[in-house]
Length: 26
Image: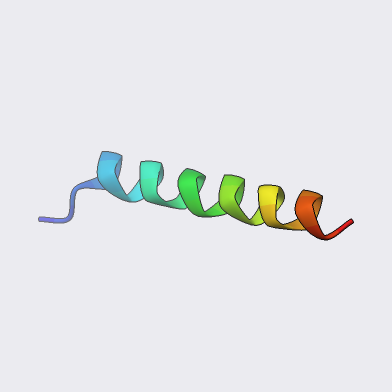
């Protein structure tokens, strides 16, 4: 079975990483 908690944390981490990347670019 897939670990949904792990997937959610992974998604949140990716989203926050993208937001930080955009902040660095601007």
